[in-house]
Length: 290
Image 1 (cartoon, rainbow, N blue to C red):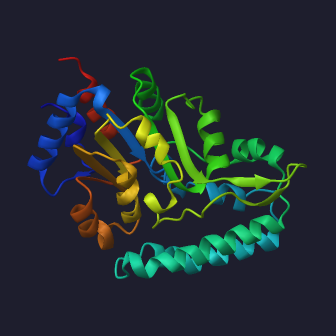
Image 2 (cartoon, rainbow, N blue to C red; image 1 turned 45 degrees about the vertical axis):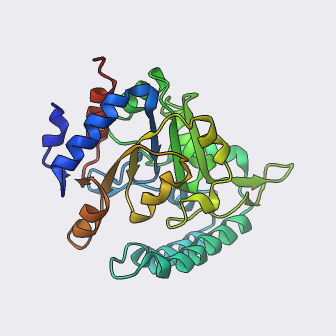
């Protein structure tokens, strides 16, 4: 098995032999058996660029002219309170769960007060510093070409996420998104968010209103999963029958504190790697015709 990308300096593996076996099994199943399940913010999108943090879907709105200075200040305060709790390795997922609901709910309330206009979203994304990871074109295009479903499960804002992918020219028909979608009134003004709240730690069956999607692709029993938090590990819970799963974790922040935890949870850990090289290398290997 030759995948040069696995030799990158950013790659960490607790059990390289296990990884090798999973990749061999994925290749044996081929592209017809494969589906990709991925987080969006800081997984498909970049964490940083030129020493600066890149924005998440929420940050794009927070940093834009469509919210007031006062709202921006309040959202920043929420971030400073809750983000350290979200990535605190000493707290369990159960402890974090209600805190995330608090954070998201407060943020949504603030955004709804801003009377955000739907038609402004395109421009807001255009003017933002949002960037997909290096190698995104190969990633999205090759999955689409091989008709491999890409399921994006995001605790961000679906409308913003779709706009980022659309503006990058890679919103292909093989993509399915489950996220927090804005609810606009007849005049295109934000009045709320649709459906159940999705946050970092409930990305599983509890919010999967679309298990129909997984029913449709039930023969795709091999999964490549990409995430950047421990909450992303449950994203494949909607899959009815599962043969093989390879979990790739992007460790973007608080590297020293989180490395051990990530190595216990993900098969491959990518430390401060702003590319999709490893995923692309593995996909290329799987798709190679025997």
